[in-house]
Amino acid sequence: MDKTITKVYWATFEHPIFKDRELYIAKTERGICRITWPTESFDTLNSWVEKQMPNAELVEDHDRLRASALELTEYFDGKRTTFSEPLDMIGTPFQVSVWKALTEIPFGETCSYSDIAQKLDNPKAVRAVGTANGANPIPIIVPCHRVIGKSNALTGFRGGLKVKEQLLQLEGYDDYTAKGHARFQF
Image (cartoon, rainbow, N blue to C red):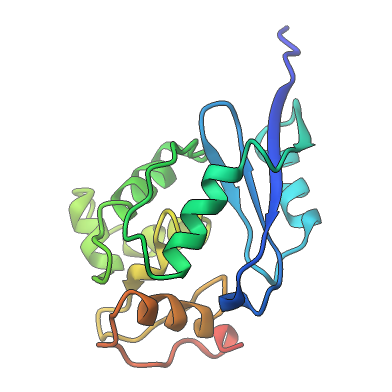
């Protein structure tokens, strides 16, 4: 039985868009695997790593995440529209297929959950697409914020609807209805 320990490197990231509240960025040797929201703690990252990679060790390493932090800063400062850092998407095959589809939504554009389901040749999987979208471990870079309801409503968002709205506005997109399910309006 292989007991190889995977190292997951992490660092904090702050930007005025989040009122300088910390995000945690984590990566493996393959690429970025997790970004938390400012409402999530280090325990969120730790729990996710324990669940997804039971033989992993979290190692703080700001130097190793410097390029990732720079790309995020450039995005939030309006100087970047795409990301080039490699990704390590850890999830079920269906989740990964949804997340890969999210990366194909162009900057400043949106699509619906049913659009993603159609793209995956599984038009009845709209709810499953929504669930996978909500479980996206690499938000912002894997742009789950670009998925809105068919009626142009913002719908639910793990980072909070205000953050979703901020990200869409940052990208110059404002053709949406600023409402969603009440439980996500925070």
